[in-house]
Length: 478
Ligand SMILES: NC(=O)C1=CN([C@@H]2O[C@H](COP(=O)(O)OP(=O)(O)OC[C@H]3O[C@@H](n4cnc5c(N)ncnc54)[C@H](O)[C@@H]3O)[C@@H](O)[C@H]2O)C=CC1
Ligand code: BAL
Image (cartoon, rainbow, N blue to C red; front, side):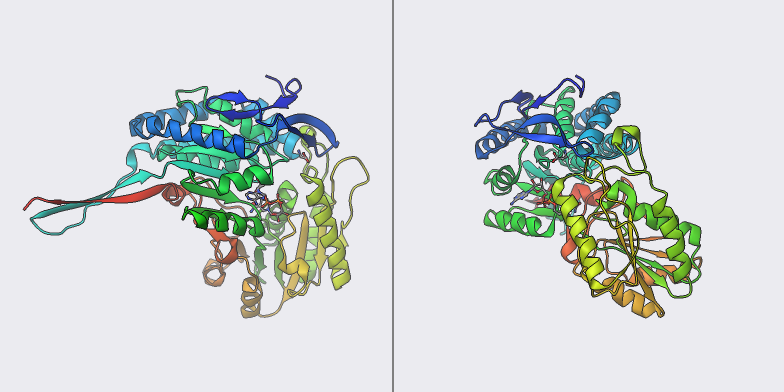
């Protein structure tokens, strides 16, 4: 299959492509050209019912598959992903807008999730509880059943892999609903997963938007839910899940602070924060949204980060620029609106601050300085290439500003004095804090938020815990 040829995508249910129940399709377009890529099945509650039923049927077989065999299948899925790397990366770059080299890296990351969790297949252990000579008491860890996964459009394939791999290795089956503006790579991922010995129906993908998402998150036969996206939709998903007491993992937004202390290595701070806010066009929950910079290095930091922002080349993903377009019109409008808000609030626009005059959803890398932390551009998630720089004179003040939002996802501290950096990092209220780098995580790193940034963790062994429940056995041998 070539991305040039396939112009219509159906749901992937029970091991095959299936037409939508109502025979309706929506269009996904190339955000760099605004031209149609493909028509995609519009998921309704009937399609979700079929997918959940398929996952329920496959659960019986998959749960009883030997753990070591489940691990082998995950390794095979990883190999199949690697064998299709070019096609998947092209699809992702076209549909999402990101530079092709970054799309390739995301596909490799997806394969790595399957490899990482494959190794855990035969290491899912319970424990024994000492209760004396007349009793044996132990726990086992068992899958929930059907795992529903609702994914966003910023890292479509790798976030699908981050959830599907641990769900499968634990013995669950999956229904995944990708975002409507980036459905293609997830549908292909489901197909590729079934080119292995995975039982038909163990991974189902239903395309669509709010209706499909709502049907899935409120489905009575879904046993565990994973959602990545906005806080309002996360709250709606949690409310749905509450009706059936379904456990949820929520990975929501961020307004992440990077604190630059007076003794920071400026090369490291500038390059890390520029990458932290402009990578993927800033469409990352863990982006470096706010730079809190000590007044003694404030002017130097601004000059250097502006120079870096202005060096970014923008273009079509397939031409591998530094930055692609934003993914969709809503995100373009939201970003431009926040740029206007920043100007109205009185922040100083240092560079960027405008749409690029060409087809597609391109916004210039934007830097605001003299931002007061009470401004909306310092409090609300923009999800675009917009950096807010806030000066500080006292480190206690910087920590207070860093924590004064409803979010608590990530943060970073830049200083040559690692002890000092760690003591500041200790006081930042976030699920993950880096020192002298941004995006420090990996497969084994638990990722998730404090406060309204989410519930639960993804990645690492904590990411596996989300897909396992504990069962206790107590045996009287007295
Ligand atoms: N934490 C993160 O990584 C992400 C955060 N966002 C934030 O959300 C903002 C808006 O982006 P959206 O795509 O509109 O986010 P969203 O949270 O509405 O969408 C995320 C996913 O949820 C699905 N969905 C939408 N409404 C639903 C419902 N009622 N029940 C179940 N599923 C539903 C969508 O189809 C998509 O698959 C962005 O500007 C950004 O601030 C967006 C994407 C990823
Ligand atoms: N595929 C990204 C843009 C869109 O379909 O709306």
